[in-house]
Image (cartoon, rainbow, N blue to C red; front, side, top):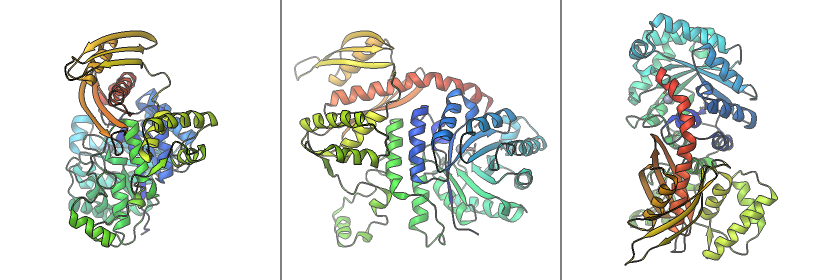
Amino acid sequence: MHKRVYIFDTTLRDGEQAPGFSMTTEEKLQMAQQLARLGVDVIEAGFAVASKGDFEAVNRIAQEVEGPVICSLARAIEKDIEVAAKALEPAERRRIHTFIATSEIHMKYKLKMEPDKVLERAVSAVRFARNFTDDVEFSCEDATRSQRDFLYKIIEEVIKAGATVINIPDTVGYAIPEEFGELISDIMNNVPNIDKVILSVHCHDDLGLAVANSLTAVKHGARQVECTVNGIGERAGNAALEEVVMALKVRGDYFGGLYTNINTKEIYKSSRLLCRITGSFVPPNKAIVGDNAFAHESGIHQHGVLSHRLTYEIINAEDVGFPASRRIVLGKHSGRHALKQKLEEYGVKYTDEDVDRIYEKLKSLADKKKEIYDEDVEALIYQEFMKISDEEPVRVEHFQVQSGDNLMPTATVKLYYKGEERTATATGNGPVDATIKAIQKALDLSPKLLDYSIKALTPNTDAQAEARVVLELDGVKASGRGVDTDIIKASVNAFVDALNRAIMRKEYILQRTELREEGTV
Ligand code: KIV
Ligand code: ZN
């Protein structure tokens, strides 16, 4: 059996379905370009039939992203498959991923269908999908709770109908590694035509076992792993791409030389980009991409690592593109050339005017703080190139705050809401609270603030602060980030970023509600 393990990335589909992670088309496109640089084999770009926005995102990615196979999800319904095929038309290589539930509980209560009908539907969906592409994946939703004989039967029949990849999802994150490995072996041994396809797995992390289950499956013969950057996804998420890939690489000895084609040096950047786009953080102790993943705090560990890196480090931080140390990258007198190099490193398409504009911003930042670090440049690049839209609903023109140890913090803001000028003044517990209250008053909106945090991006008191806000507006959750040397401005930027995302997502999410109510994924 071949040693290559294909990486099927579903950050933009399963990942994006999770609350707080939905992305606009532009954002999905940026992420897809980064996934192509990362070297994933397949990008599941969305669920084309779910909404106009999903269709547009799949279609733009199919048009503009070169390298990976571009895939769309589709229920085992002709209409879904047709829409997926239409969205994928411009792709060099395209895959239709169709699915239907195979467990008794799903068939009886969700689909309200007899197993025979489910089998018939699966076979005709695969056959229909083959009219549009030679690359058709079939998933048995809730496979780990499905009855074995039925699973073998449906897999055998969809392979006869033309499926080229069979995916075994642990939809509810219920499996235990040994048991999941056995399931994969059983499928390999009981489905007579299984050697004609690539066997894939798709594990959810409800019991924290998604990566362990995926790796065990690979050990038992699966050759495609479905995963997401930072492990985002429905509920507790999916298997984290970076963990699966690095486990296979670092423990090649255990996995008998299995390998992926991932350019691991792009891992950290992919993780950061996703955080930037979705306004989320990964926990500091997150494997591979967390801030502390390569930090050695205890004296014994530090001494060990200094004597020989391998005493306490199994991965070289640079192998995953983790910044080796906080490097001072640009000073007040560094040139445009260095800036262009940075933009290229981040894979950004820029014009000469972009370089001039960012260069001016960097110079004024260098006036405020002595040293400019990688993190500062990264924040500026994301700020400039990753706006959610050129027409953000809320734009703060100006704010002013008074605060001191014997003063009631008071803020005044002037802003534009959908082009209309508004002003307001408010008091609060502190200067940040007063300013946020003034913004809410001017907008006449009362989002629920779920989380607010702020941290320095780099050392010293002149550092830029990075603020993060998570809020909920009429049931729509969104997170935002803001960066500035002024902590109040960083907080305002983060709040407005989150608010704009919530406002813009409301309509987009509403379009999907109908499908969810039908019980799709
Ligand atoms: O978790 C799941 O079962 C899925 C399928 C649609 C592959 O996301
Ligand atoms: Zn899933």
